[in-house]
Image (cartoon, rainbow, N blue to C red; front, top):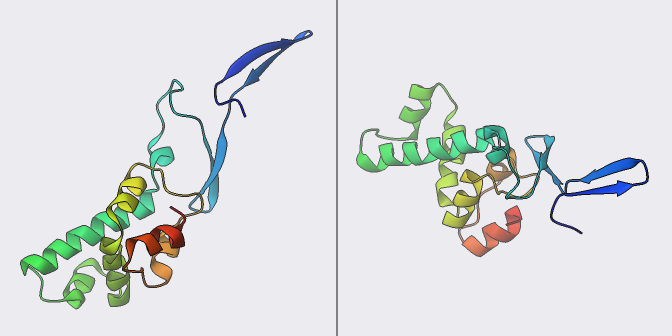
Length: 136
């Protein structure tokens, strides 16, 4: 497949070919164009907001626990008006491999990856298992 945009003539018609792929993000499909094409990608296109917020919360909450500013996860849950099990599941995101976190921050996560998928079951501690399990 040609990876560069082309403009060709087909009789009386002009054919514009722009290579693109479709990526599932947060239950909807987005069009991903190849790098190097003009135009700025929108924030939505570069990364999923729900996953980004969750990863940021996870590392913030981890820092609060490690520094001793909060006594336990229940205190975080009360302060944020969320369930304690939610806090625990979000904190598990700090166990993700650094390259997976970087890919999420850069919006280069695999198609279909969602926060629900990341928090549905326990995250494997072995980074290679994470990469395989989440499609990286």
